[in-house]
Length: 157
Image (cartoon, rainbow, N blue to C red; front, side):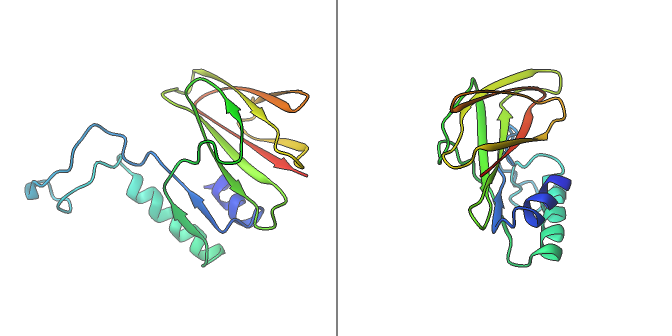
């Protein structure tokens, strides 16, 4: 929730995108004896609660903010990494972006690596998450390595 609050308050994002809310192998369920809405989607346990908490937070900070689901691979960034997905959130004033990297199928003890071409005009890079994220710069490229499934960096002018 703290990162989401930062996205709204510091980056003044118009909205955020979230994905992988239905990655269980279950199919739609029409059994009314289970006590869920019919048909019940195959969302991960707790996703509906998480999305409600996101909504409560952003409605209190910026009533015009929106949340929707979808990965944004290959939109405005060049990224090279094995099974690494990413999504970016641009600042409203276009003076930077926050980029999340997700190591697909990784757990908390797994290592991830990705190479990112630094976007033109955004020369300052700072680590947002995790604290142990390693960043090495070589020309126009940034090498990132971390432990766990998720990492976040911020690009600024």
